[in-house]
Image (cartoon, rainbow, N blue to C red; front, side, top):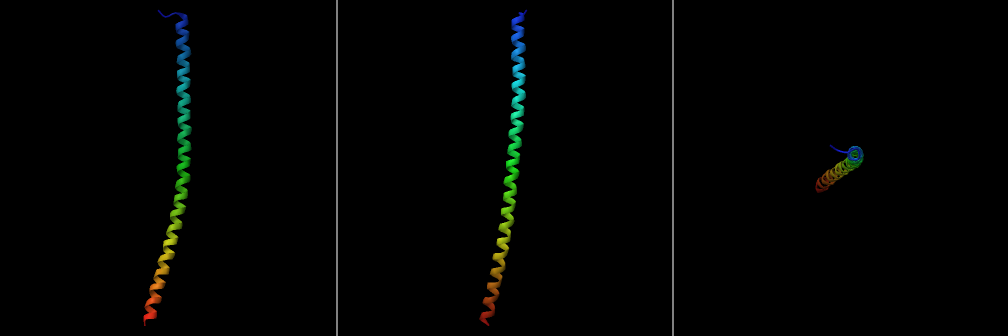
Length: 76
């Protein structure tokens, strides 16, 4: 039969373990939230860069078409 001291120690350490588990869960949740926000920011930046690159490609293609048309016109 456990003594009162042993039971008190079990209660204390059990409470500490539960507190530690709760703190770990909170810390993991915060870490996941920060990671999600960082990924959202990076995705937003990437979408903006992709849109810019698409615009630049469209401009370059238009310039290439104009240059080809000018080349054809000058050959006549």
